[in-house]
Length: 260
Ligand SMILES: C[S@@+](CC[C@H](N)C(=O)[O-])C[C@H]1O[C@@H](n2cnc3c(N)ncnc32)[C@H](O)[C@@H]1O
Image (cartoon, rainbow, N blue to C red; front, side, top):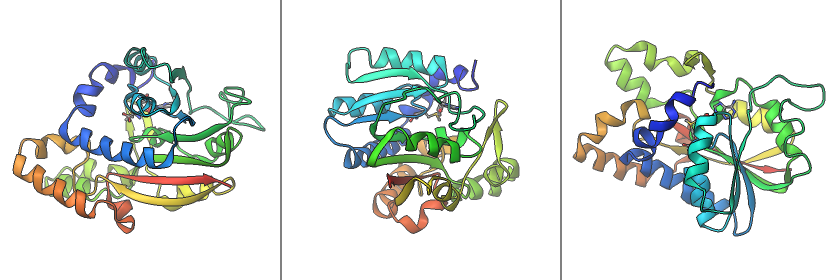
């Protein structure tokens, strides 16, 4: 049983199919199809209910979609059962290292060379460091292959301001202190830290914000029940939401690496 199992059944209703969740996912999917090509084979880490795997497969990209949560995997399997380009497989990213390669995925997918890897909406925040993942991926990604990750930022302006102004300092400051989700530590790496941990094998080639003017999911409802506000914030997001310099102030940053 993982911390995310109980969320699986309602995840799409609570997040994927909300107006803001849909907007943000569309943006991610546009960014993914710019990076991956027809007939590529990509690995997804922390796939959740399989929404992005299904989208990419519908665009002719083969996806091995992985997650640690059996409940999430069951929904992903059901959702993608008629899409032969998706394979759903268990892969837990959080285990101690062995001398040469991080376990338990030391022998998982050995010999495979993916064209690229992606992970969306904070799955990588469930790790406390990323150097072992970088090493493991370096053996499973082709040269010039792309990694694309949506990572929860440590300095989400919306969360700091909204919850700070409402006196909820625990939530406002949770990313700076580090938080936990049902006992699972959640870590919010800076762009520099993630870039440094991947740097032995991967070169960072781009960073963009994701959710700069639109709120984080714990405040979706505040905005979604005010249609004019939602419209205004969406317009700002469309206009200024790709400014790289503001990436770390967004809810997530979208970071892309290339295999050296
Ligand atoms: C916020 S959800 C994001 C799901 C999906 N990527 C999406 O776009 O909706 C985070 C996902 O990371 C998965 N996860 C958390 N810790 C993990 C780990 N150690 N290994 C693999 N997946 C993990 C969870 O089970 C969950 O499905």
